[in-house]
Image (cartoon, rainbow, N blue to C red; front, side, top):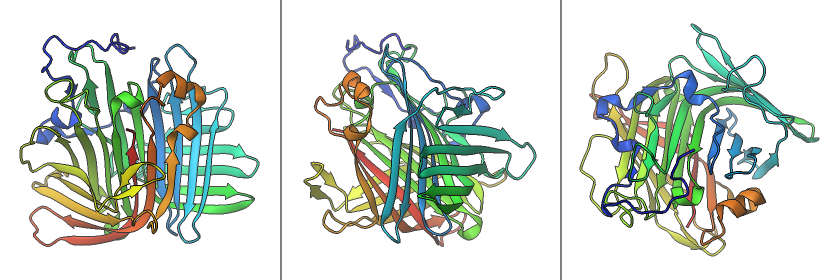
Length: 419
């Protein structure tokens, strides 16, 4: 546990940096940090820490499936573990949502390492097959209700390694606090930017085929969630065109307490992402946007922008009507130099006429009561998550070319507002 996790004491120098984003910690040629087995092991740390493993699948017939395990610690209390899933059919508008607290959570299960986990209601088993086209996979089996079962296998292609932003043990980590040797907290993400899923989602006795691409993220918020960020953006584009294409982003914006020049200089946006083109990981990128200090121009771009806002009286937030996602960075393919870049603009409609809206998630209605009280989430925060799933077109420009290529696929994205 971090020694200063409960401390609110300011640094000696009030303008000393008290936040160190991962997006500024590495040089351009060090952005791609290939995952080690330890990176995706469950940490299950104590203190006010939330850890998740989330699998997003886009099926060949245009459905969306999300499966997630949430390990939430609340100080001295025992952790709460949830399994959540959401199945969405955009053709009918049907959404199946289930979240339950599980019993007897264990990691590692007997005979496995801590990349695997199990409880009475589910098991997630990590398997390795070195030297094959799919060198590692997860098998997810869940019995969530009498009318809801899941059985799928998630396989990572050998040509698409998992990544974190930055090489080495500190890759992926953004640190909070004035003293980097003893941080107040951290945020870290590790990704499989593209996988292949096969299996079934069984609801009310009907077996829905799950087959198609997706992405996986293992994330840890090593601090109370309401102290980490005021907002999040998440992007997941998947297409089977051009040999397989994906574009993903994860962005969070800090509170005003953490900034480049100490407390009060915050609102710093940290964004990490990647591109898969032709079935290969070609670019890993990240960008920092210092709200109160202009960031220098760079060849490395990773940003999410909201446009044409509409006030949503249901949530109290200015909901975007359009979102623009941008990527740019050096090629990570062996023997290839130059930069990749990509853009995706999505129209999600207004409040009265939404486009592709799956749900507006009232987070306070979903998290367990004990976490709500312990984290004091209700004090001045009202977190909502907008979730959308739409057809999308990703425009890619490859190194050495000035002719963009348009790729059609399905685009899942989220915009989270916390305060």
